[in-house]
Length: 385
Ligand code: AMP
Image (cartoon, rainbow, N blue to C red):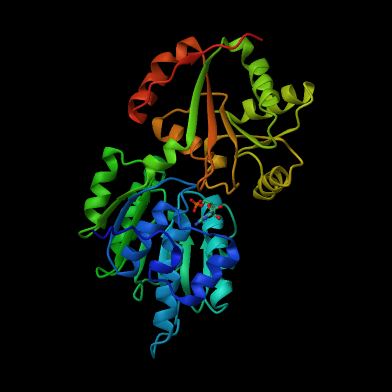
């Protein structure tokens, strides 16, 4: 009897030779589960509903086949970019994620055809350079919803030639209150198009969007495998002992890089000072810092100038740090969705990771809600120190 093995390498997914070379140059030896499943679906032009979190390799999962389609369209006559038309629209919840997606796609594109035009637009910066950049259109536009609508209002972007729309981190888009903007944007797009939706969670309020957005979608679920790779622990602690416990965990782990989550900007700043007193080199990343300061903090952390990065949920969205060994929830996240996103920062693309939450007695009920949604039940540990 012949056993049919599932495809396990990039060559079986229908990607062109030039893209396979780009993947090889990037050093990816095997596709991640989301890439294995999503790439053929996207190449076939179907709509997709994918459950996948940050770190699963989802950017390449939609980026590679979309680039391939752009290159194929190029070969046809009359397919040059005109006016302010865009071919692919990728919506992301934060500017950090938008920048990161655009950077990853630009890297893949450069290896195959430097002519592919990829732009990112987001709020908080001057709109004029973005309007100028959109002149002549773009193959791929990565945008946050609010700024995209500003650009529409300025007549700076046109969707008549749009072929595909991607909603990345759809749950976060809704959580950040973008539902009206999304509905408006979707109403401006051509009816005939390919729709791809990626989300780490599928809360009930996503249902309306899914119905509105997707036509006979293929369903993919890649979260289970990623969770297996993340060891989750919870340690009971009294509030007064949290700082000391944090320092102890960082030192005990002897790790090069630790990501700590706190809920308030002040807490991030305060922890940097507290950890410094115990000889731990930490840097804070939060919304009060300028974009330049945030990029600097992140780069310094990546280069090892700081051992610890202390971030709020929003500032940490879309951070691209490979193989992060440990994530610590100094404060519990506000929602199960945030919990999932936080622990998704460790155990990335096949690497195993450790996520530790510090739990005070009054947070017990809240943590139970998180456990219920995550379908886990963790032993409450206590550490004498
Ligand atoms: P993402 O989920 O798109 O944020 O990707 C997470 C990380 O995984 C990024 O740093 C990618 O460079 C990396 N990555 C993506 N695909 C692969 C692959 N097939 N093999 C190894 N690493 C990958």
